[in-house]
Image (cartoon, rainbow, N blue to C red; front, side, top):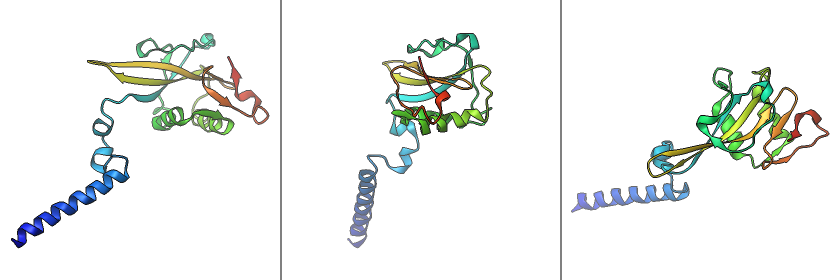
Length: 170
């Protein structure tokens, strides 16, 4: 009977510890939280894509488009020393673009790209449908050597006196 009681205590203690860990981490527990297939399966996701657009395509069509219809050529972030997760985090976690946020974002590209062709930054959203994934891309901004154009629906609160050439509306 003693080993039976000991086993019940061990199992009960494990369940209590597990419940406390899961409850204190919003339902995610370490073995599963690092694997999105377990913790985020089926949820919509957001990523970032950067494309080089020809200089003659200066006018931006701000409509959301399908992934396969993106204009321009792919801009290799890894090849240019830019962390893809940093770009995606800026896009997904910035609700209002301030002068400081824009400077931080542009600094990733300024040291690695001459802006010969402008860069268009897209927020790409994937959504699970019954038997496929819908992937749409919304242009958020276009970065040129001395100007950044933002999507009309993106909240922008830039201080024009600090860097007047850094932002233009379109």
